[in-house]
Image 1 (cartoon, helix red, strand yellow):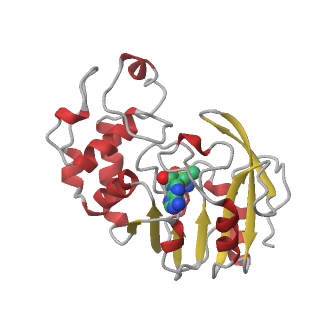
Image 2: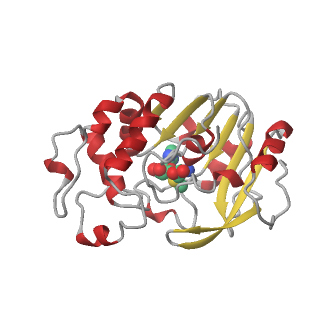
Amino acid sequence: MPGELKPFFPFYGSKWRDARRYPVPRDGVVCEPFAGSAGYATYFNPRAVTLLDLDPIIVGVWSYLIRVTPAEVLALPDLAVGESVDTLPVPQEAKWLIGFWLNRGSAQPKKSRTAFSTRTERSQLVWSERARVRIAAQVELIRHWKVSQGSYETAPRDAETWFVDPPYVDKGRYYRFRSVDYAALGAWCRDLPGFVIVCEQDGATWLPFEPLATIKSTRGTSAEVTFLRGPFDRRAASWDRRHRPQGPRRRPPLQAG
Ligand SMILES: C[S@@+](CC[C@H](N)C(=O)[O-])C[C@H]1O[C@@H](n2cnc3c(N)ncnc32)[C@H](O)[C@@H]1O
């Protein structure tokens, strides 16, 4: 059920909150070749998921989440203000996971909990018993997900839906890995089998992008654009209409090119 799985960790540029704005995936494998926190796959929770990322930290965190038991997650410790994750007797991947929770809206994990982050904690879910309960309740549901480290072009070409969310030309500088040849990526996207959703921001020209929505993010608003290609799943689209949250529609429905 879409929206049932909540984000496993906060991440700069996560698409979880806005996943409902994008077309729903078709049946079969969903591939996120620029995984980050895999907001689209997490939100839609499809039957099969393949994740790829160039960043070994991201891949380490997902590998850990895919194999860890709920009991191990629940046993992860809290962090006192000033304390560093490096002092914790837990696997490196768990330190990175906790580090993402300490640094909300960032593209890299943080090492320690500061007094400042404590002040911003009131309205948000932070690293705590509640976060551990959320993750522990969800890890059994992603046992079948596959993750590998590598560049997007090495993704197995067996997916029915591709959610391609690279570092944006303009705002991608916060990622540890951000050097992308956009002309080559555009050609790769056009050549993919199946249904393809490519994300960018207004101003990008490496594909013929169409407006999607203006989205509020941790760093202001961004005018999101998409490139859609392949057979459009009408059954999925009608599902999307029935479940769209109430309120006026600002943009016409998406059409695949
Ligand atoms: C915009 S973020 C993805 C956000 C993701 N959709 C989410 O919901 O969190 C882009 C990701 O691409 C990764 N990346 C950068 N260059 C890459 C490449 N050549 N191949 C695969 N991943 C790459 C970065 O490490 C980063 O995690």
